[in-house]
Image 1 (cartoon, one colour):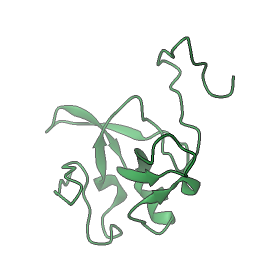
Image 2: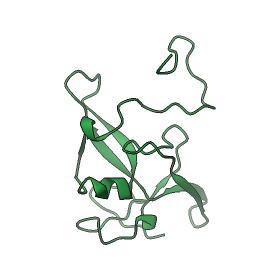
Image 3: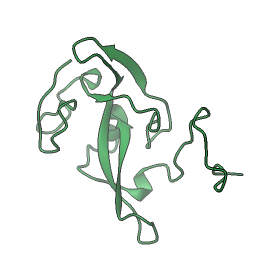
Length: 121
């Protein structure tokens, strides 16, 4: 898997100038069970084991910054998205809240706080 250092200092993300020349499968991010779905389409990332690094990685995945709307608690947040979904949006440098799914996903095996029920309950 190709690893190129870029301006975000993420050694697992391989980017070219426009991000469109690289095969989506070359974009990898260390697997994170709390962020296992694309925030653009909602589909789970494909996980592969990187024998060189000795860790599981998400394939066709990159971390993006999302600018939230004025009512949000955080001004911006980092989310994981499919490279193919990001490219379908025109490969923006930063995503806006209206380009992402608004409700974060809750993994069925992650224990939720008793004081806060899962979204939708």
